View 1 (cartoon, one colour):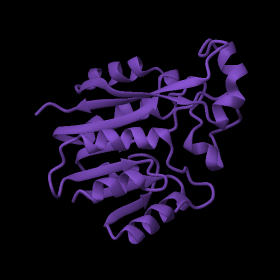
View 2 (tube, helix red, strand yellow; view 1 turned 60 degrees about the vertical axis):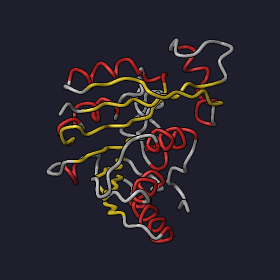
View 3 (cartoon, one colour; view 1 turned 90 degrees about the horizontal axis):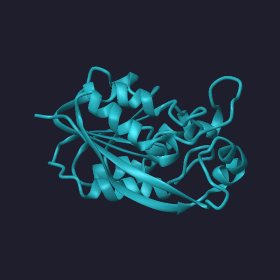
Length: 214
């Protein structure tokens, strides 16, 4: 179930779920799903026996994740907060992140409402750079970060930032998907920025896997 204003699972969710399925996960492993939205990724990890914490800045998203965990019969600790603020003293075996990553035209103030799930500043990195900076200290030795985003927001920059933070990082999955309503509406602006060509009608999504050395 997805309450109004909460990000519904889409192609990026599916791609990250596939990457999660390939990741070894010991029973009782500690997993963080940051920006959980509907809780789809948190539920996938909980079904494998992980101890899952799900965080979202949206009250409705937290309520949705809790409801979906209840309906699925799995245990997920869902808390409201801005990215890692509620868990800054914890450490995790796996962090999952499907953050806002769509480049957005200049606007007054931070994104509001449902747009918080996708709008990410002029270069799409408003939240990505924060994750690259703040996620590595929360990983246990051998812990892994799995993050999905569009190549429009510069996957190489993400890999470089995570390596600079001491993680072993690389793109491990990718998928081409048709533009959704947000990108279709922004095509002229994205072309003006040089992020799209005139005949582009698909977006490349990537999963970046970053592991903290043991």
